Length: 240
Ligand SMILES: NC(=O)c1ccc[n+]([C@@H]2O[C@H](COP(=O)([O-])OP(=O)(O)OC[C@H]3O[C@@H](n4cnc5c(N)ncnc54)[C@H](OP(=O)(O)O)[C@@H]3O)[C@@H](O)[C@H]2O)c1
Image (cartoon, rainbow, N blue to C red):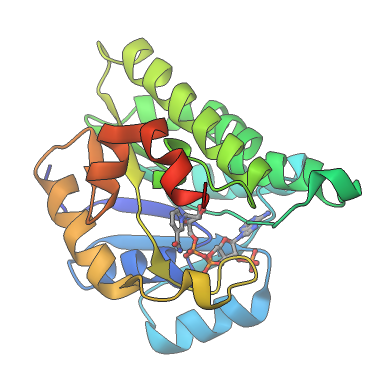
């Protein structure tokens, strides 16, 4: 696909992977809109890349999503790429009953992209060519036991993405899954175990190359191996 002259929405585009994608796509003559919950993060992103359009939206909130969709229909009727990138990650010890925010984690990572896709499909289907990109994780294929709900949401989004691709295959809407490996961002509460990943900029460069080359699954770095070996890696990853 041609990665110029598109109109692109990136949820969670003010920081981390989303911002790196937004920055590089804006540099390639696309109109890029980023959304997120924090106005200060959006303002920082705008200061760094003035070409970005920004919109406050909590993708897990139905009213907020509806406002975003209406605003996009009015202001960006040529929207043709949606990157469902917003996500959160919580460590959970289920035996301690630590279920705070569990519904929110599921809503942001899994339910929100489904609703946003459903709400935006009419607009996307009006374009000659459109792309939906769902950002999952290598952990969709081999879970880290300390992130049980996060990994399950990403596995669920992977499954949904496969079905969506099949349902839309006779339309002009392509469905792509980005499956990042460990990338150095502020996702979740990160300690030494989460250091040593790719930089968000390097990840975005390679991911966009694969997107440009029409890959259905964007597999950068170690995520290719994790995708292939899947649960066979579980014991090694979880210190058995
Ligand atoms: N970093 C990694 O190692 C890694 C690996 C595999 C997959 N991923 C995935 O990559 C995606 C981006 O994560 P990241 O690593 O770049 O972390 P990040 O910097 O924390 O980015 C997450 C973004 O999502 C936004 N967000 C969270 N909840 C939201 C909501 N309800 N509505 C709208 N925006 C929301 C956040 O902004 P606000 O808080 O301002 O809303 C933030 O900008 C996530 O889906 C993550 O699961 C990351």
